[in-house]
Length: 235
Image 1 (cartoon, rainbow, N blue to C red):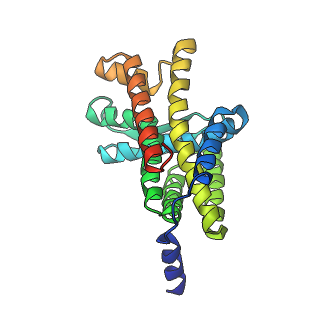
Image 2 (cartoon, rainbow, N blue to C red):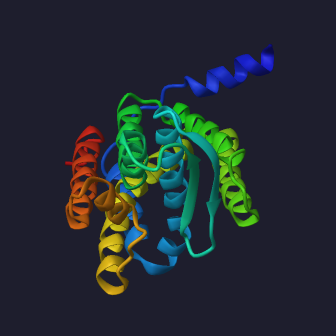
């Protein structure tokens, strides 16, 4: 009981949002991490975890049966679900992937604006645990496990200031990373004709051109980033 109370106390602990300039510098560092090739290659795996997690949640909520998630070393991923190959359930599932990091970043920004940095990190750790049991390949297991370990170490052993900075960095990374992945998606479509991308699969299901779906993903990403920045007091 004492352990449970201690954990609950950590989850519900209030941390005042980071003041300027620390908040601005932390968010700027996250944007730099998204733009810098080396850090982006590493951090891109986290965005992929969120992307595939979005597919998995949407598939489950739309009545499809989730078969598993695979994450690859080239930062690509695949979520397999069973159900009708066409129809609203499949459309919702495909829509969720590129929108997931942006929406998660927006939700995280809202929690941070309320002062729940620790609660946010615990929720993300729980989400990683739920994703872990659905992963079906060794690299995916390693990728999620390493990410979860980093979150646990910061959440359990870090002080209030460390948790606040880390939570804001992760939130800004989600928001900025969501926009970059959509730009990369269109780049891949332009150079290689990525016919199996989410946008192109949506085009075949809805008869709406793929470029319009890319545009939708971009609008969602930019809107979430703008609102998230406002919630965090960065605008």
